[in-house]
Amino acid sequence: MGNSESRFHTMLMLAAFIVVVAGMKAASPILVPFLLSLFLAVIAAPPMFWLRNHGVPNWLALLAVVAIIVVVGIGLGAVVSRSIGDFSRDLPLYQARLAEISSGLVSLIDRLGLDVSTENLQDLLNPGRAMSLAAGVLAGLGSVLTNAFLILLTVTFMLLEAGGFATKLHIAFPGPQGAVSAFEGVSASINKYVGLKSLISLVTAILIIIWLTILGVDYPLLWGLLAFFFNFVPNIGSIIAAVPAVLLAIVQLGVSSAILTAGGYLAVNILLGSVLEPRLLGRTLGISPLIIFLSLVFWGWVLGPVGMLLSVPLTMIARIILSSSEQTQWIAIMMGPEPGGTVAKESPGDQKAGEEDPLLSSQKDGGE
Image (cartoon, rainbow, N blue to C red):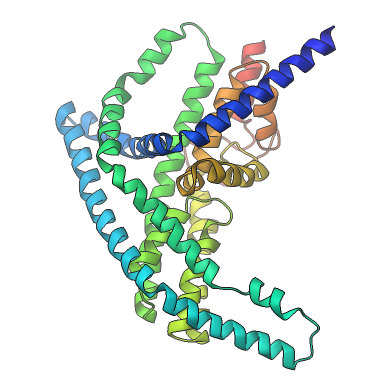
């Protein structure tokens, strides 16, 4: 009887998951602006709290932060719209030139006597797809900016509620609550991740713009903007951001400049992504690398380009929700890193080396 009941609960959870995912995909036109607003609110909340702690009135601190968001949003919208228009206009020329280069490569392979299907090779080496992908992603981000007023309004109300949210949480769940403690700990991790990742992405974009400008590659602002957004995509984001710029460098300036372009992307991502970022972020994100990659695919399929950008924070939030129920705690544990994993170097004030994942430790404390 127990096995039958367990199977029923499992099937019920699976059916609920499918229904929720289908609902999220259907509601993505509404859900994407809301999630983007939440993302912006997480970034904007620390500066607002800093101003408030230094004697600035609440209304003035909120007004200053919202004004900065408006100015940045207007500038970003102008760059995106102009760059997309110019790039889309010239895209057929770039695709035709890249097609000629790929045809020359296919002819070279034929002359070498390699037994390769010409049609399959041309289809595989079709570089126009990469350029179209870049244009499609930027168009998707540009469409999000059409909801700018709704996003700004939502961010404003979120910032108004941010100050009292912790108090409401403790009132709603009084007493020693392991789930509430875990939520606060992991929420701080999400805030830290989003803030530092935004700073690192901004530095990445500035360095890419400077390097491409020196080389003379067209649309350096466009590729810097693409590098900024795709730096939020784990594992493969920097590769995706580099491909269109390298292909454009081949068309415009030749192979040597393309190699220099690729080298610049590689140097920036090694310096910031492999050296600086681990030192600033300190401990791990509390998610296994496999889950990070799968979340990229999943959220990208459900929510589009914005889902790819927010895949890590959304997965961290999902893990918090799963950990709050005894029936789904095992899923949260399976999503986490290896138990007892350590990080070699951490910034002061971060989790000590060898300390357990906060969700795992809170579950242990709750069970004692």
